[in-house]
Image 1 (cartoon, rainbow, N blue to C red):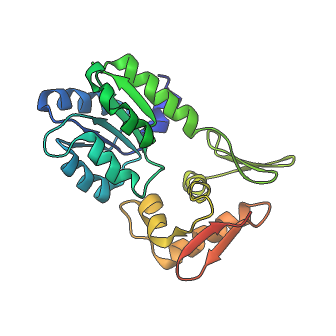
Image 2: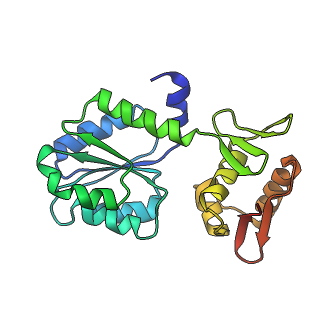
Length: 225
């Protein structure tokens, strides 16, 4: 995987769920080559607590585990979350779970045993989808790979946080992107002050060639298409 693609993965938090300690250590050590933030869990119950606390963008999970298996864990995640990318590790003997997995909107499957090529292939597919241009509204395109907005003949460069903010608004599909979500997703470990948010929104509005940001008082923002 080339350096540009590797850099795209650096800031993405990932959760590895595997009940075999030795296997989990090998997978986690491999993931650390790609990702700065790698979380690990030994079963679905522990994984769900980590998921709620750290909001990983990618989940890599085994299916058969003690206490709470991968299916039950993913059911909890998918109850309210259809955006997190989920990669399941499957064995030929897991075919009885196939219908459940399809219904749970699993993004990718990796057939055991996991190796570097299979992991590379899944991550490349994830990046290709993640970096596809987004149509924010008629005529306004967000180029995720280049961090640019395109409107008619105009090209507008964006900072990383600005790009991620517009991407989050698009992913909400008309729902409100709340102030809490903005802080958790874009400020991460820092406190988002009211002044910081207002300054940020002002800068984003100044760059937009058309006004597509709609403020919902006391709640957050939506895309006004």
